[in-house]
Each structure stands twice: as structure tokens, then as C-alpha cells.
Amino acid sequence: MSGAPEIQVNRRINASAERVFDAWLDPAMIGRFMFGPHLRDEHVVSLTNEPYVGGEFHYKVMRGGALIDHTGTYREIDRPRRLVFTWGVDQEQGDLSVVTIEIVAHGGACELTLTHKLHPDWSEYAERTQAGWTKIVGDLAAVFDT
Image (cartoon, rainbow, N blue to C red; front, side, top):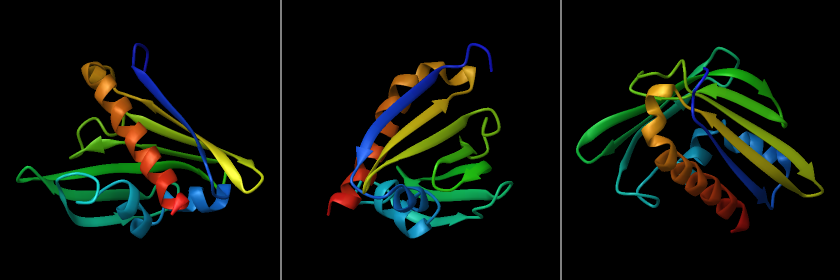
């Protein structure tokens, strides 16, 4: 993916590495920090995943009158340290956009680093993608702060 834009978000989270890692694979938790009307003007249609290497996820929401399917395939699952998956919307470019989540334990807390290598065609969305992941990771941290 030469020339592909890459964004990164770093955040210390007040929860164990295991709990933070598991949140990325649990549809109920994903509904608390990634999607839903409490985060933005949308309605969750379904949040499903197959949390194994080669398994897929589909996070479907209605936003602005349109059904949007955030989809991907798990490439690596190394609990509680590393999670790698493809990321796309409605199957568009999903195999060429890759998200890597790395988690390092620090006592009862952890440091999360999310890196998203976007498809080169998505360069103009890099800033918006950075803002989106920053909000999502912040909302994840807030779930554990409550």
C-alpha cells in the first residue's frame, strides 16, 4: 500500500488490557463506544461479528436515511496485545484499508494505539478518519471511566 495515508490514535485507558481488547470483539460493547444514537444521529440496525482470524464483522446503522454497513475481516487476534482487521463501508475498499490495535498493559490500566492504513483513494478522508477514530477511542475510554 505504498502512498497510503496512515493515521494513529494513542490513549491511556483505565482498564486492564484484557477488558479493553475484549471490548473490540463484543457487539454489546461496540454498541456502547462505536455506534448508536448516544454518539451521533444514527440508529443501530445490527452489530454482528465472527471473532476469529478470517471471520467477518458487519456493523449496520441507519444514518441520514441510508443503511451503512461497516465491514471487515479479522487478520490477527492476539489477546490481549494485538488485533488487526480490514475496514470498509458497504464492501468498498475493505480489503485494502487495515486497522491495527495494539494494547500494552500498565498495571490495572493500558495504553492503546490504533493505526489505520487507508486505501490511497481515501487520502482526502484522512483528517476525518483521524477525528472519527479519536472520538471512538475516547468514547471507549469513557466507558471504562464510568
